[in-house]
Image 1 (tube, helix red, strand yellow):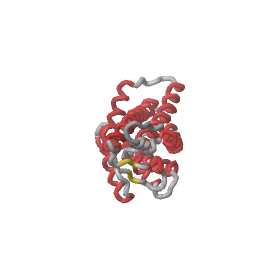
Image 2 (cartoon, helix red, strand yellow):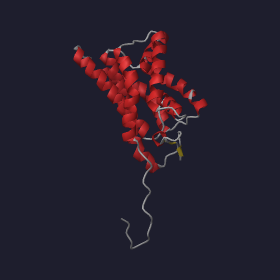
Image 3 (cartoon, helix red, strand yellow):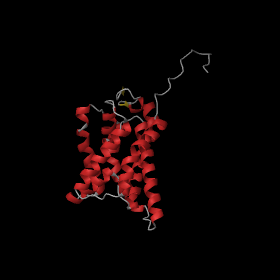
Image 4 (tube, helix red, strand yellow):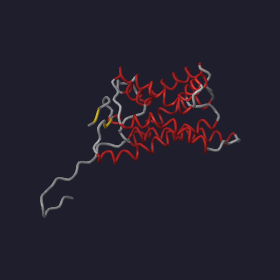
Length: 226
């Protein structure tokens, strides 16, 4: 069963997938979630300013004393409540994203090397933004439900707003709130805020999994279908 998020087929969610569809979509979802967490960790290690949402995560972590990953998970649960008025429907991917991305980030931070040269930090920042966008395209494109933050984006976009404009507005809002709480803002934050929307849409348009092809009809014994 699918839920249509407006008229954009890229945002359609398979709420109750068949086993066949789950086998087709789940690997892409899981790969996307891992890449999403890795990309976020890369931008953190670059130390040139974290992504706008991570500015908010840092500020909340500093104020509450909770770990970064724990804040990502808890804030994700809170953002899910904002889905109610925009009638955004969760899926299997929503649950997996909410409960796992923060801990993927924590794990990646343990083994990612910290470059000392400016060129290495810039490369890590740019690479992290691209990897994050690729992860978005994979897991949203799997059609099993976006994560809390991206679901807020797609839910608002389904109301008739351009996807990249919605993402940019949300990133800037998170950045300002996080900065007020003491999160780190730098050139990387601004670059992420203005690039993640267009890049995410670029990958989503190319990686979206459409409806599964229908199985060939049963033509009876002794016949073959091309």
